[in-house]
Image 1 (cartoon, rainbow, N blue to C red):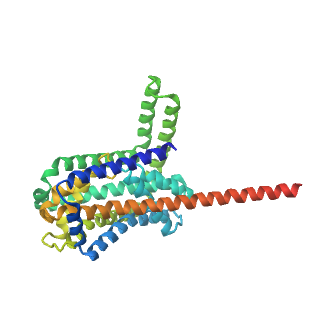
Image 2 (spheres, rainbow, N blue to C red; image 1 turned 60 degrees about the vertical axis):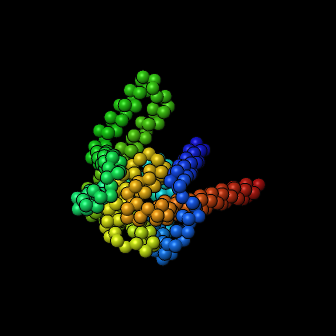
Image 3 (tube, rainbow, N blue to C red; image 1 turned 45 degrees about the vertical axis):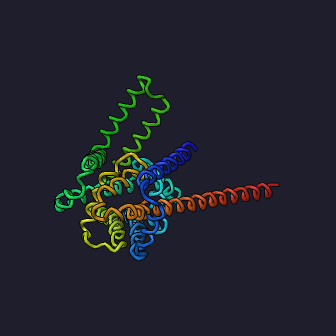
Amino acid sequence: MKSARNYLINIALLAVIFFLTYRLMFADTEFSEIMEIIRSASPGWVALGALSALLFVSCEGFAIQYMLHVMKLKISTPACLKYTFIGFFFSYITPSSTGGQPAQMYYMKKDGIKIGHSAVIMLLITISYKVSLLAMGALFLLFEQDVVQTYTSEIKGLLVLGFILSGGLIAGLILLLRKPVAVRDAGIKLVNRLSAKKLMRDQKAERYRGKLNRICDNYTAGAAYIKENPKSIFVLFCITTMERLLLMVITWTVYHSFGLSSAGFWEIITIQTLISVAVEMLPLPGAAGVTEWCFVLVFTEIFTQGLVKPALLITRGLSFYLVLIVGGLTTLVTHVMMLRRAGGIKAAKLAEQKEKEAEEQ
């Protein structure tokens, strides 16, 4: 009940951020003019952008299925895509995308996948997903210096912060993989001190100790898996890199939907990748607000002053709100089906119990 309330609060916060962002950004522009420009965009290119958005999400489903297959677990493609869309929905409505993987693991458990397996898979996907973005960003900084210097100077501070936060997260995850027991012991020692000084309740301290032990077990299993399956880690990295690229491609399709062609493919991909590096780790649901602000700052020269805001609406609509809606619908349908299945099992048990009682009489 508490978690449901928190999710509703996050959705409300996202709606408020959305309203304030677009109210401020479009205060000097007539909405009818924006819509007229949006309607002039090529439907074919916009459809290609929508396809890229859905394939972007689907790549994680293929990654999950691949990792399950490597672990000798057979799960259907639709089921893995279901986990992915549910994960993106919860990631988009929670700060720093913290709600996605717990939700995925919950629904995977409902389908009979053990937490130990799902935890290792989601851990490896997280590391690969973060490393792929950081690697792409670093490569573009190295080989597309002219583009970086020309277009990203106004978000330089955020970009540096993004590299630091992403690098810190990856370093922390790798440390957990290499030294899980040491990290667990340090965490438990901290919890014990907080508990001894009455800064944490005993019941809460015990819960955190159990959580640290479970995390340690998962990371130990993850480290062992990496040592035994280096090839599958490489394949996973390739899948998540393709996933990242498909997300960046959306901006390129929107650019061409307005009949523009002066900027090259890799130029747009570079800029969009660096925006992602700059905003992804910020503690806002879906990085809402700051993503829009960065897009307008960086892409105005490429899209032109008159087209950059309509381009923002289409790009963000495809990469964020389309995924949010599809993910929300997937979550709703999955939960309803799960409740019906649980109700059917309960009804069957009651019928069986009544039949036994009748036989005894």
